[in-house]
Amino acid sequence: MTMEILVISVFSIFIMFALLSLHVSPCLPFTNFVFGDSLVDAGNNDYLFTLSKADSPPYGIDFAPSGGQPTGRFTNGRTISDIVGQAFGEMSFPPPYLAPNTTSNTILAGINYASGASGILDETGTLFIGRIPLREQINYFEQSRTTYMVSLMGERGTQKFLKKAIFSLTIGSNDVLNYFQPSIPFFGEDKVSPIMFQDFMVSNLTIQLKRLHELGARKFIVVGIGPLGCIPFVRALHLVPSGKCSVKVNTLIQGYNKKLSEVLDRLNQEMGPEAIFVYANSYDIVSGIILNHHQYGIENADDPCCGGYFPPFVCSKGNDANTSSVLCNDRSKYVFWDAYHPTEAANIIIANTLLNGDDRVSYPVNIRELYNYNP
Ligand SMILES: *[C@@H]1O[C@H](CO)[C@@H](O)[C@H](O)[C@H]1NC(C)=O
Ligand SMILES: *[C@@H]1O[C@H](CO)[C@@H](O)[C@H](O)[C@H]1NC(C)=O
Ligand SMILES: *[C@@H]1O[C@H](CO)[C@@H](O)[C@H](O)[C@H]1NC(C)=O
Image (cartoon, rainbow, N blue to C red; front, side, top):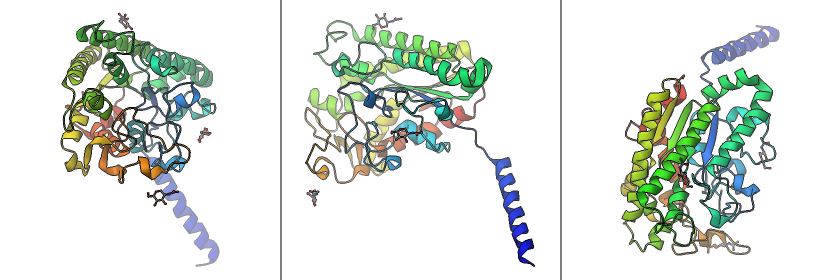
């Protein structure tokens, strides 16, 4: 065989493989519009004047794309929404809406509107000054729909594009935390009954879901509230011993989650099958992880890995202090990263459960099925 023929045949084999891989490629892009609080904020609060920021080490210490530098994520590594995106081959994460380099060019991955300290109710998070409440996050989505999408693809093209995208909402934790914090003047326990507070949250969230639907969203993941009565911050404040959770806080959350899942059932009946609303049962998933943590290779489900167990719960390296002094030895062995947020290790377990779990954890379908669903 001459060199030339060898080159040609190697080349044609290469082409054949390229065509073959094009043909079998499952690469439906994973477009995710992310709404929520610090559980999924990917850096929006870095652009706000706020006390709720994760812009200093050791936040991000295990986040490979930034080389371990902080990105504004409120954990050591990836958030649940990062991990889910990667499971579908997403190469770049939805950029924060407020980042100056977020443009029409980055729209294929989606956009992240989430903001630490924010809640369903506009008043939530006032103590932290800057934050983007859910209503405003959706105003921002409406703006980006016009400036980044309709201008690029036209109205019809935008509708087609949004029909395939996934809209996830991870919000409500801060509303509950504020409710139980007496220093906050708006909707304290003393002013509004737990039942009424749950109803405020659910009805306001429903309004925002309907707005998104009007703007073209069809595939929704609505994440319930996790067992906040078990997080280090709440346990310390309510003097709950280790291994136990605040019953009062968890009872309010379970009532809210039940009402939320009923509303989503109703929306599925009214708007399905052209739209689908998935309820993500983070309460049972996280409770299961805390209860059976040894089963998952986790050793500590009580203490935060970073910062103290007591107020003011600062997880920060400071100016000249040694990072290792504020950190636990093995981050992969803890459920909690700081007093409020899960570690990447816990986020991986939660994300995998939502991706592949049965209808007890993700209803009516799991996230893998939602991804393949064509409304
Ligand atoms: C946008 O800017 C941030 C911060 O400078 C950078 O980390 C990120 O890689 C940039 N993203 C794109 C798509 O250029
Ligand atoms: C929404 O929440 C507010 C309090 O922030 C409450 O006054 C209102 O009744 C709630 N429900 C609706 C449907 O707006
Ligand atoms: C940080 O602390 C560890 C253990 O206490 C020590 O081995 C290491 O040298 C310290 N690093 C710096 C930069 O001071």
